[in-house]
Image 1 (tube, rainbow, N blue to C red):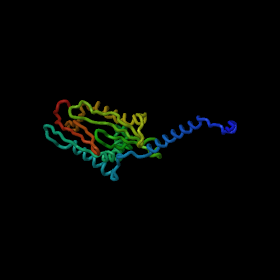
Image 2: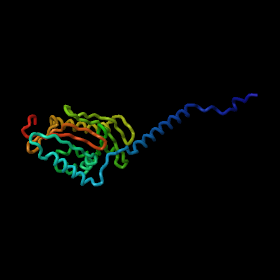
Image 3: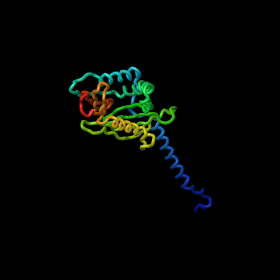
Image 4: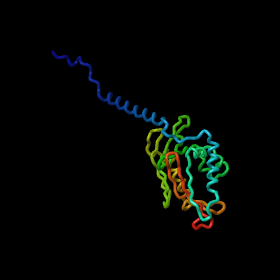
Length: 229
C-alpha cells in the first residue's frame, strides 16, 4: 500500500537553502575580516615611555655625529638607529620643527606615523579611519642602499589593516607612496646623496640596510674642497 502523494509535505525549494548557506559564508568571512582588522599586528612599532628624552637624545646624537671633526682627508663612519628612537623623535621633536620652520610642514602628518624595521625593510604604521576605532594600517617598504648603488632601492611591499592583508588600496598605497616620493624628492635635491654642512664639508650617505629592530647607515665626511660637492 503506497502513501498518497497528496499527503506528503511539500518539498522545500533548494534556492532558499543555498541562499542561507551563501549568506552564512559571507557573514563568516566578514566577521573573520573584522577580527583580523581589529587584531593588532605582531611586533608593532613602539613609542617608548620616555619619548621626550629619547627623541631629543637622538637629535643631539645625530647632530654631534654629523658635525664631528674628522680626518681632514675624509673619513667613513656608521650609525645604527633603534626605530623606537625615530618614533620618539617623530612624536615629540618633529612637531616643534614644523612649528619653527615652514619647510618641515609637508612632514607634519608623520608625527602620527610609527616606524619599525625588519630584515631588508622598514615597516610604516599609521592610523586608519576614525581614531575611535583604533585601526592601524601597516605598509612594508623594502629599502636598501648598497655601496656603489646609484639610487636607494625602495618599493611598496605588503599592506595590512591590523592583521588583514589588503590589496594596494588607495589608503595603503598612499601611505607607502609618500615614503617613496619623499625619498625621491630628497635624492633629487641632493644628487649622489650628498649634503653640504655650514662649514662647507660634505656628508655622503653610502649605504643603508635594515635589520630586525635596527636601521644601519654608513656615511662619509669629505673636506670642503672635495670635488662633486
